[in-house]
Amino acid sequence: MDLVFVDGSHTLNYVRSDTANAFKMVVPDSGVVVWHDYGNEFPDVRNFLDEIAAENSKYEFSHMLHTLMVVAIPRDAKK
Image (cartoon, rainbow, N blue to C red; front, top):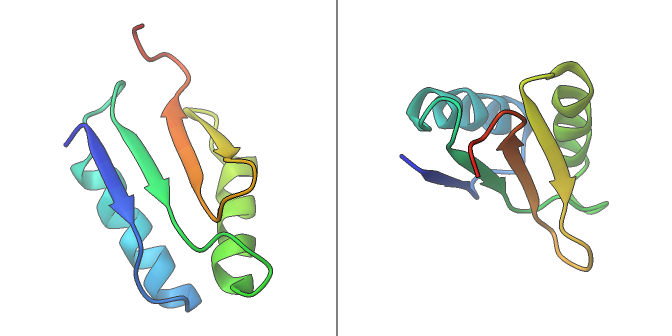
């Protein structure tokens, strides 16, 4: 997949599983992953994404201002 959109359950186990599956499906080195529900009202989603963003050097994670979405784009993506 070129784009995987994650918008499911808001619990840690589900967001962790959905994220692992998203990274299995996305095209290596060019695919994009987008998560919904990155907000204070969903602490498991927010904390998990903050954690993997800090640990993942392959992707650049960005919160889309004024939304509940986070986008991960490969750092080495060809433009």
